[in-house]
Image 1 (tube, rainbow over the protein chains, first blue to last red):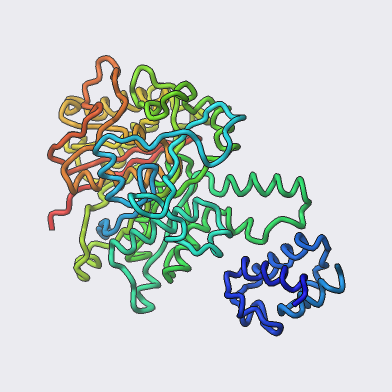
Image 2: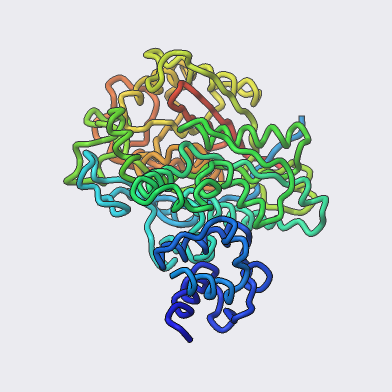
Length: 77
Length: 420
């Protein structure tokens, strides 16, 4: 797994208090990992902070799964 | 009007997490004061406070993990965490877990706070200044709003009745219990989870009260002696933190389910000083009128009172309250015991009235009045027994708890033994 994926996973595990093995490529933050809409806002902020990038609101809405997040950040970073 | 009784108690205090642990330490004359550890107090004048003892949950320490999961805890200010802990204890003590929808609909929550998420607001303002508005957490607002204590408690327990919150500075806890009792008396609910919570021991909180000249500043070498209500050497209050929550219940409802009944809420009086933003009037008129109304509502005479838990903050206002109480009691002043438990736990601001109402309830249960510690030189000519440095084992049937707040807001609660 890439360095970016590791760092994203660490943030997701910390913020949502979920087991690491639940954070799979297709795991949806809301449907599978117990997040609500405010949690996803906070997750996106944490990604921005960690990777020093800005994720615009319309882009943030497309980040629904762990895989989405890794893909977006890999392209943006 | 329907009768309202108290069937559950919960508390997080600077002496301990838990009602019984706090009570035994209070009766033993312990102090919860010490050097500030919650933040670096280097820049503020007062470097001591009454902090909730943090630990693993043993020996009366407060373990945050016991009350909220880390994931949820991150999203709330500590006053909400304290409220959740005290409410859990109170609900468990009352044994009230409504099984049906009707029970949930008839159970409400009214937990207030004086200031709410002060440290969260301060921290977030600093963060925004440093990193810009995009770094402000989505949980900042719902984690700081005062009524979110009531909201969080209702969500956890499924209580769907009236959800309300009181904000009357240092009278908050007393107003919350009084107002919640009225909701039951008026048939808006059968059960109310009510009280107050506070966590203002942060740099801006201490700086703010220092600026008001309200805090003790001279006892850095011996913080445990700093809170000394009525004593000639008092020099301001000592900031406390924590929460007090009670379960109030309609009398027949409590009896029908065989609940343990601690006491009855008999009277509740309110008044406004219309005088000054931080100081009471010299004659204590506002407090006097609140006490008078509470007695009238209770249908008892001042001479029926056995124990009074004073507002007594360890400020110049202590003797003003003393004068008003002695005026109220008249010839009966000599038979009443009045103490200030703030001498042990400091001033819990919005939680004070609720925590102190619980002490009054326990005074009835155990027939003992807690002491006023550090009271070495009582005011000359005081007739009433201020329980200096020693608890008083005595007959206690009727109690009064006084709470007065900035803005000139006053609340008095009268509670009594239930002879069922």
